[in-house]
Length: 284
Image 1 (cartoon, rainbow, N blue to C red):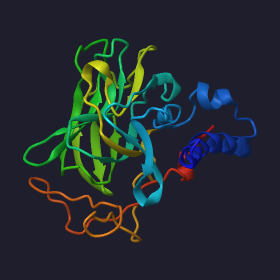
Image 2 (cartoon, one colour):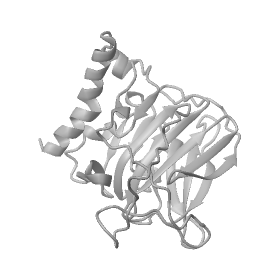
Image 3 (tube, helix red, strand yellow):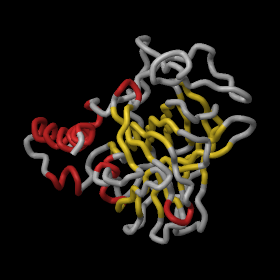
Image 4 (cartoon, one colour):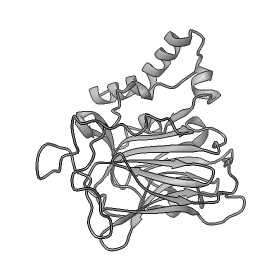
């Protein structure tokens, strides 16, 4: 087993279990894996057991911490209940740190119905106007619809070959997109039902949306988490460092825009939560 894989297994699985024990002394494996009492969920845990896939690899991510790399042939799928609650709360937040290596239309993740024809929950990246791209929240009651419903779609600067951090906050009336520590846009939405119940046979896919929809992601993922509610520290800013462009220095990239999106010339810096950050420790 490689050193990078050992580190990922330790920080994503063993350390949270140990922390639960040290904090409460009564946290069991069922508490951690079965009852899903925790208030946040690390979806990238689904990729740990499949690291032998030749199209899934470990590489340096932002600030030198490891990230998962997904080639177009990767196949990361798991029963959704291993990593998500049975029912989404009425208000939730999705956090993703990622670096696409192409501009292709793709899903960062998707929860599919048993027939794998409808995305019940997911984040989709697609072509936007001019040279921009779109980030969409897909939220569908598959009992009512036979198509995947993009309930909110936001136009952003081109994402390819740049590290990006997005926070998608979902309230009872709105979907709000934060990017680079700034609120980029918000849209009023009506979600039916307000608390989405997944089918018991639904499947979680990472970096694609199953064999029928495809739209596979080619790139890196360092953070992919779902939180109940909206923890106030999800967008962390400081003055210590910025995302640096590949052309200027280092391995980091600057989130910048062109065309229809006018972001600040000097972006506010923010901290990508690394794999070793203790915010990954689940609460028992």
